[in-house]
Amino acid sequence: MASDPIEAASDLPIFREAPHRSAVSGIKRSLDLLGAVVGLSIFALLFLPIAIAIKLDSPGAVLYRQERFGLQGKPFTIIKFRSMVQDAEALKSVVQNEASGLIFKNKQDPRVTRVGRFLRKTSLDELPQFWNVLQGDMSLVGTRPPTRDEVSRYKPHHWQRLNVKPGLTGEWQVHGRSAVKDFEQVLELDLRYQQRWTPLYDLKLIGRTIGVLLKKTGAY
Image (tube, rainbow, N blue to C red; front, side, top):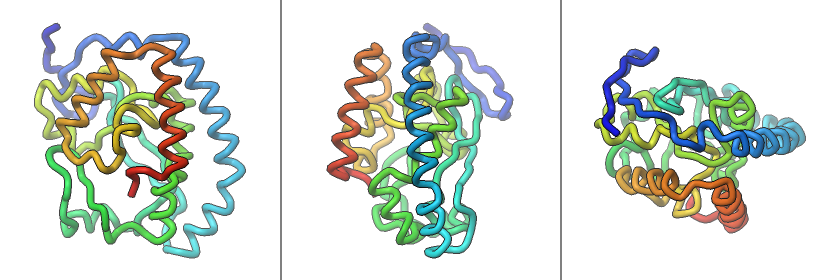
């Protein structure tokens, strides 16, 4: 299906197609709501000790909010536990990007705090994102939500990855996580997810994600 450029509310040129069938699936949304309730319950139990650890380790806010882009390029605010120093965005230009294409990765990123490195390794920094899932901006399973800097450099075919909602996990999570350093490979995984998607496939990816998290594979 051909895509037409549409000017989004974010003033970025978005190439939109009809949403993927997963984005309008009642079964997927029900699974998201159930997962969000469970995830937020865990978040409530762990919030205080994680918040104290973050505060003792580095000055700044406990939670980190950033503009990201979701289904069909819709902007939303993602919420995470802060894992970097407070002025991390201002320092990004002095950190070498070890990834290829429209993603940013650095295994020894000096902006990451000691507590933040643990939170990332265990993916505990992502617990607040269950609120994004509850609100409907994200799903349990989907694509990695890009930043404004990334989408501002998208070519038309890159927008295909945003025909689904962004997810807490996805193909990228079970195929290397942060070790996947080529954006075109990320895109390939995202499109493969769209081709293979069923509610049962989501459950399979969630199960595989749990295994990856327990092994602490590929995260930094």
